[in-house]
Length: 153
Length: 124
Image 1 (cartoon, helix red, strand yellow):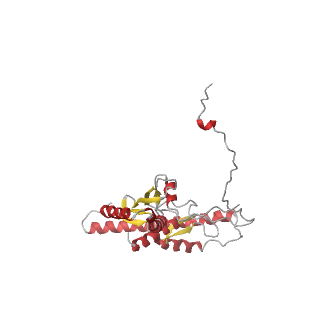
Image 2 (tube, one colour):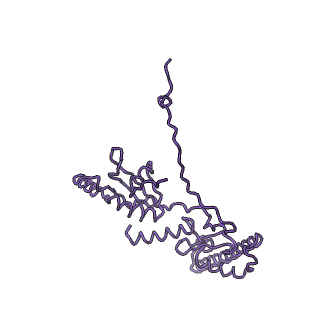
Image 3 (cartoon, one colour):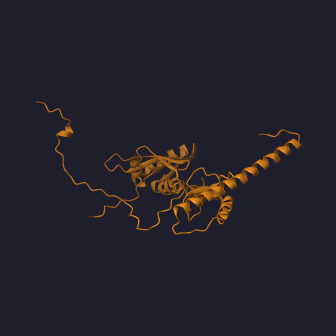
C-alpha cells in the first residue's frame, strides 16, 4: 500500500523542551497608591511623519545588509529620500557606482550607521513617526548594531 | 529639514506626546499650539486623574478657581469627596466656557456694528 501522507508527517519528530521568557511587572506593594495615568491612559498615536524603508542583503545564509532605500515624509510631503549602505559590504568600485546613482537621482547617501543615528533615531523616533516596511522585522534586524549571546542559565 | 527645524519639530512632538493627542485644542479659547498647552486635572490633582488639555492662560484661571473648593478631609479622599471635587471642577469648566461664549458673542456684535457703520454687510 502506498503511503500518501505528507512528507513532514513521515519524519519522526524530536521532542524538545521549550523555554519561555516573560517580562512581568512586579505586583504592587500592599497599600501603595495606584499608578497615575496620563491623559486617557492610552499611548499617543504616531505623528503625521512616516519613515518608509527597505533593505537589500547578501544572498548567503547571513543575509547581511548591503544597501537600503528610504523616504521620510510628513503626510504626503517628501522631506528626504535616500540610500544607505554597509561600507564593509561594498567594493570601492561598487561604492563609486552607488555614489553616482545617488547623485544623479538626488538621493541622500548615508552609511547604515548614519541612517540609524540620523534618520531612524533622530528623526523617526524623536518625531514619533510611523515606520513602514515590507516584512519589517527582517529589515529592522538588518540594522542591528550589535548582538550578544544569551545569558547562561 | 535642517537642524533648527528638526529641533523645533522635536519639541513640538514631545509636547504632543505629553498631551496625549496629535490634535490638541483648548476647549475654552480654541488655541491649538501644543507648546502653550498643559494638562488640567478636572477635579484637582489630589482628587482626580481625569486630564484635559487646556492652554496655559485658561489653566491658570481654572486652577485659581479650584482654590475655592473645599479642602481635603481624608487621606486618601473618600469616593463621595472625589466625585464632589470632580463635579465642582466640571462646573468651573462650564463657567469658563460660558464666559468665553459671551466674549465671542460680544465680539461678533461689535464686528457686525462696525461693518454696518462702514456701510457694508456683515459676513456670517
